[in-house]
Length: 328
Image (cartoon, rainbow, N blue to C red):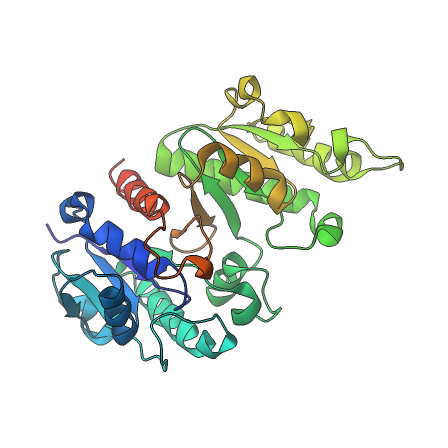
């Protein structure tokens, strides 16, 4: 059977992603994985980092214009080569790689636009250097590129418990200005549909407040004027949701057993506890795009470059998850 390919964008060249990819490629898991995987990145950098870290794999170079007409497997690293000017295999992250990263994304998005790819996975990038303040993160960047702005949803998924922040890489001082009742309702509806369509499950939601203990010294708090109305609207739409709950006690063991998804108002409010609970065993999914996009739940982590200490669990979980949702 000819399966659609999973497209992986390598991302920041001076990140731990190639190392993580090498570790996955070496594993028995990868050899048995039936969906072809195509990596987009620099052949020369990949080969140089491979040599420095004492890995040795064959590379199957693929031309982007031929991808529609070829049948591939995972016996070699399937690679679409993107040119990158560099001198050392490991270096400091800077804006000099932005053109290269943008080209990798453009190739990957064009493949997805033409419905050749099954899903898109991207390695980490430096938001500071790549976006230079234009986008909050990759979630918003991809929404802009696919003309799905304001429909995007970040879901940090684990089979036991998932979380979704209503604002992503936003300064804390700006969170209250970014949230709205309509936005919360739309994002919850998107997550609910994903669980039903892809996971065959009707999820149970909990939602946090914004203020400590869901209280404010001011009249007409965000809980009263934004969050509680969103809860009422989603409940009227037959969504199973409760709240708002104080975030400092919501993640206590006896509480989280009652829910599938916890909705938070800002990034660290829900990502800190879920990463503490599950470590690398979670994946970052972008919903609301024309395709499924996943990012392993780690950053560039350039401090560990070339040390062979990086944990590949999150990339493996991303591939396991894609297999699961396409075979349900």
